[in-house]
Length: 491
Image 1 (cartoon, rainbow, N blue to C red):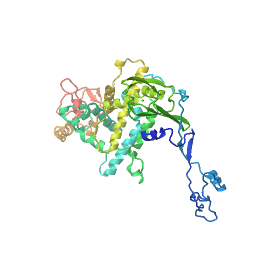
Image 2: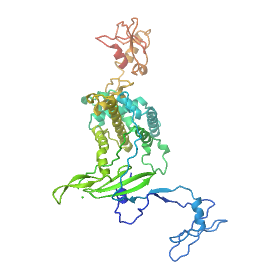
Image 3: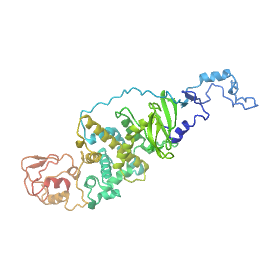
């Protein structure tokens, strides 16, 4: 889409010189020299004979190109036939008249299938952050950490990266001045502090990566190289969202105030007619459309400073279309600003990641609202964006992950289950072994089942409970006075 300066040049005064009579695309043909072709000489100047170019073995120099009023030579005609068709197409804009400029809206062929169910927030999110892109991010992050220091590996996994993203969403809902404050006991942010340690969170943040630095070309011109895989993936996912008939592309808000004159030009771009309109309001307003135009014009009210009264001025149809549908872009900006991820970082691509995550969440929420409306769910039962994002953060932090209460400070072996068990085994060598810490405290699939009574394996407990851990294969107490089952799996 052209920027303000480019569009202003396209919509310049119609009396200025320039090609305006054609609705086709101008072809700029490069003149490369190929093997077996005669080289093209320099063009002749006034009062000079054309200078032949350098001749090659078995070839004769070809005279320069013809000028206005001259017939092309046979050699030029031959080159025109044999040159490749790698031509850059530049649209030529033609001035539209004051009447009969209305465009017929194209036939709407799209169709949005009505929803049959409303899913959980995390299910909408995983439609965009699919397993393949998650594995790519984790792989590139682990590679980047190794490239920085071969002696230290990140060992990041997909569930842990989901927890990292969940913590970012939770932080966006409860804003603190520094990310380290979320782990302060006085501020009480257990959703974050109890699911990931501060040092591990900062380690993941420092190493999150999306592209292999070793493949960066020396003459790289892609300023988004570091986030290109993620950007390409999300762009394809966003484009696949079923869209309504009218779409508005906006860059900034333009206030419409004040005189009513306009200019309109038309061009073919990729076989699609595009109209560019410049409307003089309080300042010039420039719009581009594939279906709207100046006609049919209407009128709008504006205050005239000279007359000191309200007057009616002509308003192009394209302006009314823009005002009617531009709200979607402003709505997106407004929703993004409500709960934006504000985590600071010195790496520019981190800010891009945070923005991509915010946009994905808003898109997920809008799809969720569309599904709710299709199913006739009352507005009072539809989650607001804040509730939706909180549910998503909770799912990413807790779903299928270990939830362990971690003590502050340096870990100590004194009083731990393993240390107490080793002391007991020295006194009673026949004591049955218990699983190692990596299994006992992994937080996965430890379920109590009722079995024949056996002695509790929690040190310093002499009870004979019926409850048995199906994974550790040991008896443990669960009563209203004590919970050896929880202590055994967390201490």
